[in-house]
Image (tube, rainbow, N blue to C red; front, side, top):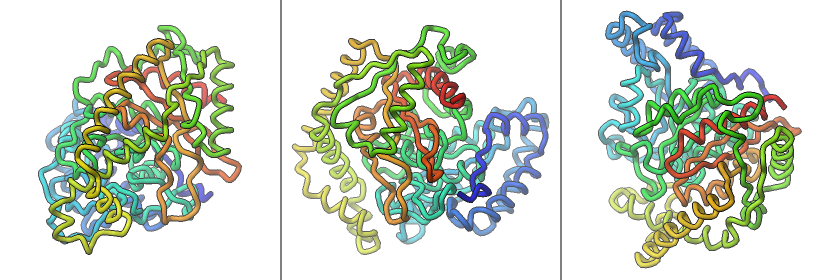
Length: 446
């Protein structure tokens, strides 16, 4: 591992320093652009932007003029954020990882960017995405091992946080596009409950799945950003100081492990690490219950693919008709597959999803489980840049629209990160972050 490429920075500490006035936004921008100039040619996390430094300096001066007293400034005052290149940002083009003609994909600024800018953040730039948030990889490399994939489709966002280019980046997840790259790059990736962060201003992939999420170096950073981006955040139910010594103040959270064909999809390195993590959590006094939640996982996977392929074809009807020859083979194949899906099969798969969501909630409640745990990915980041890896470990939770996050959870013998996936209840994102802090403490102390 080239450790010079792995230097994640704390969002909490950076935001506090900027609001204390050290450094000023202008000095911060100078340092930011120097880091990007030095490291990004090695990992390609950002979409190239001529004049980035001039743009950011102008925005930093305007921000400082609006907030002459940094201590009274918004919580993300001066913080630089990476934005996945399917998310519209005023003043920056959107390419969606494609070679479609400039301007074709243009649209109004995304709600999530509105909220970031209202919180005082500066947009460092667009981060590289797989084409249209699908499976055709971008140029980004994994900072831990540049010859390995960073995952996808939010590849640039995960790599930018892992390399310390920015302390916060925005991604999206249709199936596994936040949780998986977070695990591969050794950072925290948080995918809220479906719909909790508006998708207005985001190029759709499969609207029944698409969810805006975020990457940070640690859980404290996610806890700082989430209330600013999610609708109707209940701060009283969110992370606080209640977790001590690995036990939550309201009682130790009960952990559920979905055994069976789903968990069998994890490869040997992921499974062995997961077993060690479960043993460690149990040794710290947490209850671990093994549950047969997904006995029909193959059918669930088929239903999810039916919805995904049908909807990506619908999302790209106009663009593909006009520019289909410019699409990459992987994306074209998904769209062409989606065109063959009968609308009645799509509707049936959506009904099956509703039934699955209700059945899962009932089984969790009956078992008294607070959190579900699983590997974040089938293993460490695969060698090569021709694939973004398998998203299958995120599939059931994305299908159900549940909030999930990936916590860094050790490394393989080869020095590649692994992640622990933590899944909450629908709408209970605040509780997920609060309880996940218990697990982070245990894992960090191992």
